[in-house]
Length: 397
Image 1: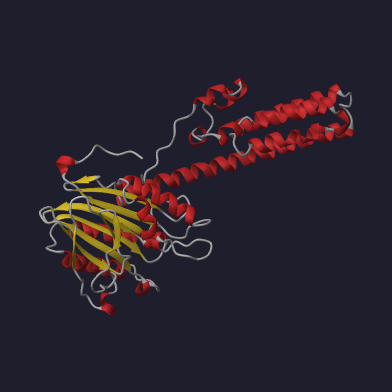
Image 2: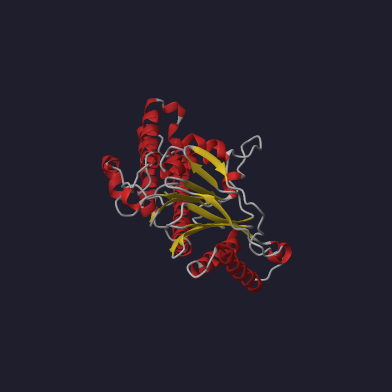
Protein backbone atom coordinates (compact mmCIF):
# COMPACT_ATOMS: atom_id res chain seq x y z
CA UNK A 1 0.00 0.00 0.00
CA UNK A 2 3.01 2.25 0.10
CA UNK A 3 3.00 2.38 -3.78
CA UNK A 4 0.07 3.90 -5.54
CA UNK A 5 -0.63 3.05 -9.14
CA UNK A 6 -2.00 5.69 -11.45
CA UNK A 7 -5.45 5.15 -12.92
CA UNK A 8 -5.98 4.48 -16.60
CA UNK A 9 -7.52 7.17 -18.74
CA UNK A 10 -11.31 6.99 -18.23
CA UNK A 11 -13.61 6.47 -21.15
CA UNK A 12 -15.01 9.97 -20.72
CA UNK A 13 -12.12 11.19 -22.87
CA UNK A 14 -13.89 9.63 -25.84
CA UNK A 15 -16.86 11.89 -25.19
CA UNK A 16 -15.01 15.22 -25.52
CA UNK A 17 -16.00 17.47 -28.45
CA UNK A 18 -14.24 16.65 -31.70
CA UNK A 19 -12.19 19.88 -31.64
CA UNK A 20 -10.89 19.05 -28.19
CA UNK A 21 -10.01 15.53 -29.32
CA UNK A 22 -7.99 16.88 -32.24
CA UNK A 23 -6.04 19.29 -30.05
CA UNK A 24 -5.57 16.98 -27.08
CA UNK A 25 -4.87 13.66 -28.80
CA UNK A 26 -1.06 13.52 -28.59
CA UNK A 27 0.02 16.94 -27.47
CA UNK A 28 -1.08 17.01 -23.88
CA UNK A 29 1.62 15.95 -21.43
CA UNK A 30 1.32 12.35 -20.36
CA UNK A 31 0.56 13.20 -16.75
CA UNK A 32 -2.20 15.62 -17.83
CA UNK A 33 -3.90 12.92 -19.88
CA UNK A 34 -3.93 10.73 -16.78
CA UNK A 35 -5.77 13.17 -14.56
CA UNK A 36 -9.19 12.03 -13.49
CA UNK A 37 -12.64 13.38 -12.76
CA UNK A 38 -12.78 17.14 -12.32
CA UNK A 39 -9.55 17.88 -14.21
CA UNK A 40 -10.84 16.08 -17.28
CA UNK A 41 -14.13 17.97 -17.31
CA UNK A 42 -12.23 21.25 -16.86
CA UNK A 43 -10.48 20.70 -20.19
CA UNK A 44 -13.66 21.72 -22.01
CA UNK A 45 -14.23 24.74 -19.74
CA UNK A 46 -12.55 27.24 -22.15
CA UNK A 47 -14.87 26.07 -24.93
CA UNK A 48 -17.86 26.46 -22.64
CA UNK A 49 -16.75 29.99 -21.75
CA UNK A 50 -16.68 30.94 -25.43
CA UNK A 51 -20.09 29.37 -26.04
CA UNK A 52 -21.69 31.00 -23.00
CA UNK A 53 -20.16 34.42 -23.67
CA UNK A 54 -21.28 34.30 -27.29
CA UNK A 55 -24.83 33.27 -26.36
CA UNK A 56 -25.10 35.89 -23.61
CA UNK A 57 -23.79 38.65 -25.89
CA UNK A 58 -26.26 37.77 -28.63
CA UNK A 59 -29.16 37.77 -26.19
CA UNK A 60 -28.12 40.94 -24.31
CA UNK A 61 -25.95 43.02 -26.66
CA UNK A 62 -26.15 46.08 -24.43
CA UNK A 63 -24.20 44.29 -21.66
CA UNK A 64 -21.19 43.56 -23.92
CA UNK A 65 -20.42 40.04 -22.74
CA UNK A 66 -17.95 39.79 -25.63
CA UNK A 67 -15.38 41.51 -23.41
CA UNK A 68 -15.24 38.36 -21.29
CA UNK A 69 -14.02 36.18 -24.17
CA UNK A 70 -10.43 36.72 -23.01
CA UNK A 71 -11.23 34.50 -20.03
CA UNK A 72 -11.18 31.45 -22.32
CA UNK A 73 -7.47 31.52 -23.33
CA UNK A 74 -6.49 32.57 -19.81
CA UNK A 75 -8.31 29.52 -18.45
CA UNK A 76 -6.82 27.27 -21.15
CA UNK A 77 -3.29 28.20 -20.05
CA UNK A 78 -3.86 26.34 -16.78
CA UNK A 79 -4.63 22.99 -18.42
CA UNK A 80 -3.98 23.02 -22.18
CA UNK A 81 -0.66 22.86 -24.06
CA UNK A 82 0.63 25.90 -25.96
CA UNK A 83 -0.96 24.85 -29.25
CA UNK A 84 -4.30 24.22 -27.62
CA UNK A 85 -4.17 27.56 -25.79
CA UNK A 86 -3.48 29.37 -29.07
CA UNK A 87 -6.39 27.59 -30.74
CA UNK A 88 -8.70 28.55 -27.88
CA UNK A 89 -7.48 32.15 -28.20
CA UNK A 90 -8.12 32.05 -31.96
CA UNK A 91 -11.65 30.76 -31.36
CA UNK A 92 -12.26 33.52 -28.81
CA UNK A 93 -10.89 36.13 -31.23
CA UNK A 94 -13.07 34.78 -34.05
CA UNK A 95 -16.11 34.88 -31.80
CA UNK A 96 -15.30 38.46 -30.77
CA UNK A 97 -15.01 39.63 -34.39
CA UNK A 98 -18.19 37.78 -35.36
CA UNK A 99 -20.13 39.35 -32.51
CA UNK A 100 -18.86 42.81 -33.42
CA UNK A 101 -19.96 42.24 -37.01
CA UNK A 102 -23.34 40.98 -35.85
CA UNK A 103 -23.86 44.17 -33.85
CA UNK A 104 -22.61 46.35 -36.74
CA UNK A 105 -19.89 47.97 -34.65
CA UNK A 106 -16.83 46.22 -36.05
CA UNK A 107 -14.93 49.46 -36.53
CA UNK A 108 -15.89 50.98 -33.19
CA UNK A 109 -13.23 51.72 -30.58
CA UNK A 110 -14.78 49.33 -28.04
CA UNK A 111 -14.75 46.42 -30.52
CA UNK A 112 -11.17 47.12 -31.57
CA UNK A 113 -10.13 47.27 -27.93
CA UNK A 114 -11.86 43.93 -27.26
CA UNK A 115 -10.05 42.28 -30.19
CA UNK A 116 -6.69 43.68 -29.07
CA UNK A 117 -7.36 42.56 -25.47
CA UNK A 118 -8.23 39.00 -26.55
CA UNK A 119 -5.07 38.86 -28.69
CA UNK A 120 -2.88 40.10 -25.83
CA UNK A 121 -4.43 37.69 -23.34
CA UNK A 122 -3.98 34.80 -25.80
CA UNK A 123 -0.26 35.51 -26.25
CA UNK A 124 0.26 35.88 -22.50
CA UNK A 125 -1.70 32.67 -21.89
CA UNK A 126 0.40 30.76 -24.44
CA UNK A 127 3.57 31.86 -22.65
CA UNK A 128 2.08 30.89 -19.29
CA UNK A 129 1.15 27.49 -20.71
CA UNK A 130 4.71 26.98 -21.91
CA UNK A 131 6.11 27.85 -18.47
CA UNK A 132 3.61 25.52 -16.79
CA UNK A 133 4.50 22.62 -19.08
CA UNK A 134 8.20 23.15 -18.39
CA UNK A 135 7.56 23.03 -14.66
CA UNK A 136 5.44 19.89 -15.04
CA UNK A 137 8.25 18.18 -16.95
CA UNK A 138 10.76 19.25 -14.30
CA UNK A 139 8.53 17.94 -11.53
CA UNK A 140 8.02 14.67 -13.40
CA UNK A 141 11.80 14.30 -13.75
CA UNK A 142 12.32 15.01 -10.05
CA UNK A 143 9.67 12.46 -9.13
CA UNK A 144 11.30 9.91 -11.39
CA UNK A 145 14.64 10.45 -9.64
CA UNK A 146 12.91 10.23 -6.26
CA UNK A 147 11.26 6.96 -7.22
CA UNK A 148 14.62 5.54 -8.33
CA UNK A 149 16.23 6.69 -5.09
CA UNK A 150 13.36 5.22 -3.12
CA UNK A 151 13.78 1.85 -4.79
CA UNK A 152 17.52 1.89 -4.06
CA UNK A 153 17.15 3.10 -0.49
CA UNK A 154 14.01 1.26 0.47
CA UNK A 155 13.14 -1.56 -1.95
CA UNK A 156 9.82 -3.30 -1.32
CA UNK A 157 9.94 -5.73 1.59
CA UNK A 158 8.67 -9.24 0.79
CA UNK A 159 5.25 -9.74 2.33
CA UNK A 160 6.15 -13.27 3.37
CA UNK A 161 9.43 -14.14 5.10
CA UNK A 162 9.17 -17.73 6.27
CA UNK A 163 7.08 -17.72 9.45
CA UNK A 164 6.46 -13.95 9.38
CA UNK A 165 4.07 -11.92 7.24
CA UNK A 166 4.91 -8.24 6.83
CA UNK A 167 2.88 -5.20 5.81
CA UNK A 168 4.17 -1.61 5.62
CA UNK A 169 3.14 1.97 4.98
CA UNK A 170 5.31 4.99 4.27
CA UNK A 171 4.52 8.66 3.67
CA UNK A 172 7.22 11.33 3.41
CA UNK A 173 6.48 14.71 4.94
CA UNK A 174 8.04 16.78 2.14
CA UNK A 175 5.64 17.83 -0.60
CA UNK A 176 5.88 15.50 -3.62
CA UNK A 177 8.67 13.53 -1.94
CA UNK A 178 8.81 9.73 -1.96
CA UNK A 179 11.66 9.30 0.53
CA UNK A 180 12.62 10.82 3.86
CA UNK A 181 14.46 10.15 7.10
CA UNK A 182 12.23 7.28 8.30
CA UNK A 183 13.19 3.78 7.21
CA UNK A 184 12.52 0.10 7.74
CA UNK A 185 13.85 -3.23 6.53
CA UNK A 186 13.31 -6.95 7.11
CA UNK A 187 15.63 -9.86 6.34
CA UNK A 188 15.47 -13.61 6.85
CA UNK A 189 18.61 -14.83 8.64
CA UNK A 190 19.91 -18.02 10.32
CA UNK A 191 18.70 -16.50 13.59
CA UNK A 192 15.18 -15.88 12.36
CA UNK A 193 13.52 -12.91 10.72
CA UNK A 194 15.21 -9.67 11.73
CA UNK A 195 13.57 -6.26 11.40
CA UNK A 196 14.59 -2.66 11.83
CA UNK A 197 12.59 0.54 11.89
CA UNK A 198 14.17 3.91 12.53
CA UNK A 199 13.93 7.67 12.39
CA UNK A 200 16.80 10.04 11.65
CA UNK A 201 16.76 13.29 13.57
CA UNK A 202 16.59 16.07 11.02
CA UNK A 203 15.10 16.50 7.57
CA UNK A 204 16.07 16.82 3.94
CA UNK A 205 18.96 15.18 2.12
CA UNK A 206 21.18 14.79 5.23
CA UNK A 207 18.43 12.69 6.82
CA UNK A 208 18.08 10.60 3.67
CA UNK A 209 21.85 10.02 3.57
CA UNK A 210 21.87 8.94 7.22
CA UNK A 211 18.93 6.61 6.62
CA UNK A 212 20.77 5.10 3.65
CA UNK A 213 23.85 4.51 5.83
CA UNK A 214 21.76 2.76 8.47
CA UNK A 215 20.04 0.49 5.98
CA UNK A 216 23.28 -0.40 4.20
CA UNK A 217 24.91 -1.27 7.52
CA UNK A 218 21.89 -3.33 8.60
CA UNK A 219 21.91 -5.29 5.34
CA UNK A 220 25.66 -5.88 5.55
CA UNK A 221 25.63 -7.13 9.16
CA UNK A 222 22.19 -8.59 9.78
CA UNK A 223 23.01 -12.18 8.87
CA UNK A 224 26.41 -12.47 10.56
CA UNK A 225 25.59 -10.62 13.80
CA UNK A 226 25.24 -13.23 16.58
CA UNK A 227 22.62 -11.17 18.43
CA UNK A 228 20.82 -7.85 18.31
CA UNK A 229 23.10 -5.93 20.73
CA UNK A 230 26.05 -6.83 18.50
CA UNK A 231 24.09 -5.63 15.47
CA UNK A 232 23.36 -2.36 17.27
CA UNK A 233 27.10 -1.91 17.88
CA UNK A 234 27.74 -2.40 14.15
CA UNK A 235 25.10 0.21 13.32
CA UNK A 236 26.64 2.62 15.81
CA UNK A 237 30.09 2.21 14.26
CA UNK A 238 28.74 2.77 10.75
CA UNK A 239 26.80 5.86 11.75
CA UNK A 240 29.73 7.31 13.69
CA UNK A 241 31.93 6.88 10.61
CA UNK A 242 29.27 8.44 8.39
CA UNK A 243 28.93 11.55 10.53
CA UNK A 244 32.72 11.91 10.72
CA UNK A 245 32.86 11.91 6.91
CA UNK A 246 30.14 14.55 6.61
CA UNK A 247 31.17 16.69 9.56
CA UNK A 248 28.94 19.78 9.89
CA UNK A 249 28.02 22.22 12.63
CA UNK A 250 25.09 20.09 13.77
CA UNK A 251 26.78 16.67 13.48
CA UNK A 252 26.92 16.23 17.24
CA UNK A 253 23.16 16.85 17.41
CA UNK A 254 22.32 14.21 14.83
CA UNK A 255 21.22 10.78 15.98
CA UNK A 256 18.97 7.93 14.90
CA UNK A 257 16.35 6.14 16.97
CA UNK A 258 15.73 2.52 16.03
CA UNK A 259 14.03 -0.68 17.12
CA UNK A 260 15.64 -4.00 16.22
CA UNK A 261 13.47 -7.13 16.31
CA UNK A 262 14.36 -10.80 15.97
CA UNK A 263 11.63 -13.42 15.52
CA UNK A 264 13.16 -16.92 15.68
CA UNK A 265 11.37 -19.68 13.82
CA UNK A 266 11.69 -22.35 16.52
CA UNK A 267 10.83 -20.28 19.60
CA UNK A 268 7.50 -18.52 20.38
CA UNK A 269 9.28 -15.31 21.33
CA UNK A 270 10.42 -12.02 19.89
CA UNK A 271 13.65 -10.30 20.92
CA UNK A 272 13.93 -6.51 20.82
CA UNK A 273 16.53 -3.79 21.26
CA UNK A 274 14.98 -0.32 21.51
CA UNK A 275 17.40 2.55 21.01
CA UNK A 276 15.37 5.59 22.02
CA UNK A 277 12.49 4.78 19.65
CA UNK A 278 8.73 4.80 20.35
CA UNK A 279 7.78 1.43 21.89
CA UNK A 280 6.24 -1.16 19.54
CA UNK A 281 2.70 -2.36 20.10
CA UNK A 282 2.02 -6.05 20.70
CA UNK A 283 -1.32 -7.26 19.37
CA UNK A 284 -2.24 -10.49 21.18
CA UNK A 285 -5.68 -12.10 21.48
CA UNK A 286 -7.47 -8.87 20.68
CA UNK A 287 -5.45 -6.89 23.23
CA UNK A 288 -2.94 -4.10 22.58
CA UNK A 289 -0.02 -3.27 24.83
CA UNK A 290 3.14 -1.21 24.52
CA UNK A 291 6.44 -3.08 24.65
CA UNK A 292 8.60 -0.79 26.75
CA UNK A 293 12.32 -1.66 27.13
CA UNK A 294 13.37 -2.90 30.56
CA UNK A 295 16.34 -0.51 30.40
CA UNK A 296 16.98 2.40 28.03
CA UNK A 297 19.49 1.98 25.22
CA UNK A 298 21.16 4.99 23.60
CA UNK A 299 20.07 6.19 20.16
CA UNK A 300 22.54 5.47 17.39
CA UNK A 301 25.43 7.99 17.30
CA UNK A 302 24.92 8.81 20.99
CA UNK A 303 27.08 6.05 22.49
CA UNK A 304 29.96 8.46 23.19
CA UNK A 305 27.66 10.51 25.43
CA UNK A 306 25.32 7.88 26.88
CA UNK A 307 27.37 4.68 26.80
CA UNK A 308 27.16 1.71 24.47
CA UNK A 309 25.02 -0.74 26.45
CA UNK A 310 22.18 -2.12 24.33
CA UNK A 311 19.48 -3.85 26.34
CA UNK A 312 17.99 -7.03 24.87
CA UNK A 313 14.41 -7.81 25.88
CA UNK A 314 12.46 -10.98 25.12
CA UNK A 315 8.67 -11.15 24.98
CA UNK A 316 6.23 -13.98 24.22
CA UNK A 317 5.30 -13.94 20.54
CA UNK A 318 3.11 -16.86 19.61
CA UNK A 319 1.20 -17.91 16.52
CA UNK A 320 -1.16 -15.15 15.39
CA UNK A 321 0.58 -12.41 17.41
CA UNK A 322 1.53 -9.18 15.66
CA UNK A 323 4.04 -6.42 16.38
CA UNK A 324 3.33 -2.92 15.14
CA UNK A 325 6.53 -0.90 14.67
CA UNK A 326 6.15 2.78 13.86
CA UNK A 327 7.95 6.13 13.89
CA UNK A 328 7.14 9.26 15.84
CA UNK A 329 5.48 10.75 12.78
CA UNK A 330 2.51 8.69 14.00
CA UNK A 331 2.78 8.79 17.78
CA UNK A 332 3.63 12.52 17.92
CA UNK A 333 1.01 13.70 15.44
CA UNK A 334 -1.21 16.40 16.92
CA UNK A 335 -4.71 17.64 16.23
CA UNK A 336 -5.90 21.26 16.29
CA UNK A 337 -5.84 21.30 20.10
CA UNK A 338 -2.27 19.99 20.28
CA UNK A 339 -3.35 16.56 21.56
CA UNK A 340 -1.09 13.67 20.56
CA UNK A 341 -2.56 10.95 18.40
CA UNK A 342 -3.79 8.16 20.76
CA UNK A 343 -2.25 5.32 18.81
CA UNK A 344 -2.90 2.41 21.18
CA UNK A 345 -6.50 3.51 21.66
CA UNK A 346 -7.16 3.87 17.91
CA UNK A 347 -5.49 0.57 17.04
CA UNK A 348 -7.94 -1.27 19.32
CA UNK A 349 -10.67 -0.37 16.81
CA UNK A 350 -9.00 -2.44 14.10
CA UNK A 351 -7.19 -5.08 16.11
CA UNK A 352 -9.24 -7.87 14.53
CA UNK A 353 -8.62 -6.63 10.97
CA UNK A 354 -5.93 -8.20 8.75
CA UNK A 355 -2.61 -6.37 8.90
CA UNK A 356 -3.01 -4.73 5.50
CA UNK A 357 -6.43 -3.35 6.41
CA UNK A 358 -5.20 -2.29 9.84
CA UNK A 359 -2.46 -0.16 8.28
CA UNK A 360 -4.92 1.15 5.70
CA UNK A 361 -7.23 2.35 8.50
CA UNK A 362 -4.31 3.77 10.45
CA UNK A 363 -3.00 5.70 7.45
CA UNK A 364 -6.33 7.33 6.70
CA UNK A 365 -7.03 8.02 10.37
CA UNK A 366 -3.68 9.78 10.82
CA UNK A 367 -4.26 11.97 7.78
CA UNK A 368 -7.71 12.90 9.07
CA UNK A 369 -6.40 13.58 12.59
CA UNK A 370 -3.64 16.00 11.57
CA UNK A 371 -4.89 19.33 10.17
CA UNK A 372 -3.15 20.89 7.18
CA UNK A 373 0.31 19.79 6.05
CA UNK A 374 2.17 17.33 8.24
CA UNK A 375 5.77 18.12 9.16
CA UNK A 376 7.12 14.62 9.79
CA UNK A 377 7.43 11.37 7.89
CA UNK A 378 5.11 8.49 8.66
CA UNK A 379 6.32 4.89 8.62
CA UNK A 380 4.85 1.73 10.10
CA UNK A 381 5.46 -2.01 9.83
CA UNK A 382 3.38 -4.94 11.07
CA UNK A 383 5.11 -8.30 11.66
CA UNK A 384 2.67 -11.21 11.99
CA UNK A 385 3.77 -14.68 13.10
CA UNK A 386 2.03 -17.29 10.97
CA UNK A 387 2.27 -20.94 10.03
CA UNK A 388 3.42 -21.00 6.38
CA UNK A 389 1.20 -23.98 5.62
CA UNK A 390 -1.87 -22.14 6.91
CA UNK A 391 -1.07 -18.84 5.23
CA UNK A 392 -4.01 -17.30 3.44
CA UNK A 393 -3.95 -15.97 -0.05
CA UNK A 394 -2.83 -12.33 -0.44
CA UNK A 395 -5.36 -9.95 1.02
CA UNK A 396 -6.76 -6.91 -0.68
CA UNK A 397 -8.08 -3.75 0.91
